[in-house]
Image (spheres, rainbow, N blue to C red):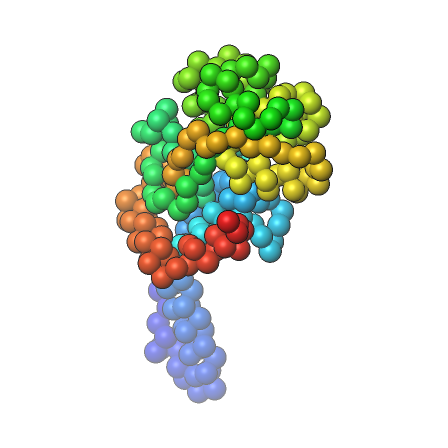
Length: 257
């Protein structure tokens, strides 16, 4: 419908129709502007990288992503899911982010690896054997059972090494509970995940860790078809955070060596 503003500007109706025309113009302009899209983010509860239901300490990787999004001029919306479901969401979604994923050979070409944000150190932990009892993979094979989280780099690595004594669960909390209850003899994961989860569950049994078996980079990742322009914006944001010390400052909030 055409509105002729000038034909209506007569007598006492001048202000009335001026306001009507301005409102119509603003409304039409708003309909022509693209809506601000929001980046979908999925996470899994893996302290200290991703922490569910903690507003003050949502996890190192979550805080890194939030700051990177702000610097890149993006908005994000985070949902926490079990790890296997989060992985499936990233792989299936056209433009989905995940704050932290350990780099693994098996999945090397399945994700878009946006930027490295930290390094993980995988080792065995137990409460039933002395530390010097599992310093090599061969001695670790003597464990009757080792718990790992399904589909993680820890799972992939031990599977590649021919371990047949693996018990697979969906979360580090489940792993910690199984180890503390004596349902498995060992747990294989990043040392910081061990200690954060053990402390969060208030377990008092001494947790003994072996030597580091595998060092892997931790990445902010995205769906394979994630838009190139957005990906570059996030990469540039992470690089600026490395350069100005923001990554180190955030890490010190969650971990003191």
